[in-house]
Length: 77
Image (cartoon, rainbow, N blue to C red; front, side, top):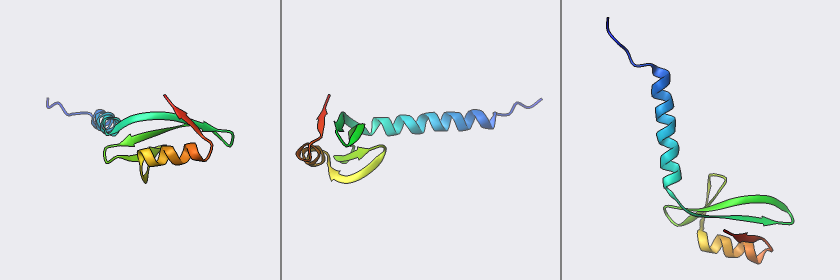
């Protein structure tokens, strides 16, 4: 009898490795909050831009953090 690979297993493995690549492409992360928002995480992606909630802001990480702080947000850690 011929054994076949379970397609569900392949899909699960693909998803697991895809998520690991996303996490590996992110550099340092900080948590920011302000009176107007709930806490959120800002990460530096592999090209140096800030990423918020998985979305590339297309803005340099350090500039993005400085602008948030200038607007009254607290970012750190």
